Image 1 (cartoon, rainbow, N blue to C red):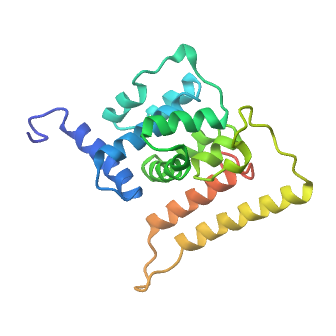
Image 2 (image 1 turned 90 degrees about the vertical axis):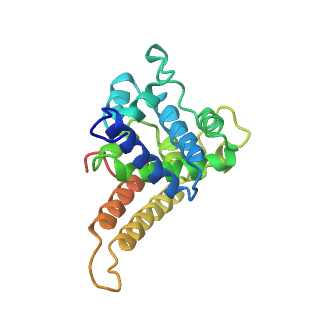
Length: 215
């Protein structure tokens, strides 16, 4: 049925485009795998946002995916605890993967959605979450910190270690920018890649607390 005879066709088409982008990001042709990963990201992040922030995210989604976003949502019970183990357990269970696969998979979906959302909107979402969860959503493995620790205690970090960590974050952000702004062989800059790189760099700095959502 064409777009001219089916009023739902445009919504379905856009949802398929977003699903295809996720599938491309995780390098799979299995749309069911991509759907589980996207659904896991939407539900796991949604449950850790307040009602207003969740509405802000849903406004960025195609109509069909907005329905998936709100599937099973209980506004009277959000946000749920923000600890990393429960976040990864929920994400892994919903995505149908092991917890060791959850971190890189979450990072890929985050990068994909950052390109699909309006510029800077995903940064506002990440800013609502604690630093630990921002790192998880950037695909950074924190297993050395939370393995076997139900309470996820804060590690003691010396000023030198903290400075080194921030310098490394800055270096990673600069590297992301450099890769995105490289001129291809034909000499024409890909502005889309440049914007994506700038957003990636900003998310790295945001997770480290070196930038605000509006900067």
